[in-house]
Every structure is written in C-alpha cells, then in structure tokens.
Amino acid sequence: MKTIIILLLLIGLTGALFLTRPQRADFEKYARDNKLSEAQTSGGPNLAQTVAGKLRTFSGGTIQLESPTDEFLKKCTFHNYLLWTNVEENGQVIYTGAVGHWFQRSQAVAPTKAA
Image: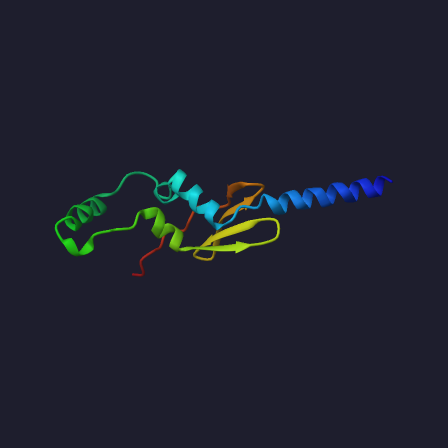
C-alpha cells in the first residue's frame, strides 16, 4: 500500500512539473519585464561607448528600431525538455525554467572582438 501511495505522489509531482514548465513566450515576457539585456552589463558606459553613441545620432542610417531586449532574445536558443526548459546564448545555458519560474544559471557571455 505504501508503494502505491509513493507511486501516485511521484506521478502527481511529475505531472505538476510538466504542466508548470515555462515556455518561450514566458521567457520573452520575463526578459521584457526584468530588462535582462540591460542587466547584462556592469557599470556605466566607458568613454568610447559614449562617443560612439553620440556619433550614431548624427547619421540617419543607423536608426535602431528594435529594443536591446529584442536583440538579446534573437540570440537565445530554447531547449524544451519534459520537465524544464533551458535558454542558451552562445552555447552556454544562462537560464533554466521549471515550476513556473526562471532560474539564472550563468551570466550571458559578452562577445569579444578578435585582435
């Protein structure tokens, strides 16, 4: 009898994990609400970034229509498993979604320029 109760609880737990697994749309909403693309950088812009931002406003050809969050989401890859969802950027898992929540696994890797 005890084994049957344990199996029923295990089946119920597995069902709850499956039904509460977050999807891609949930991560997009989470990213927009928490401004994940802006939280990636630490500190303020350096002098070169400030000058580049000011120069960009002089030319009309470099108008940015998409938000930084949209650009961040385009770089993300989603892997849905039965009980959880992984979000990867540059081949590194940065978020795992389970039980209706997103858990940060690591910071996004900033692209480095080759010398």
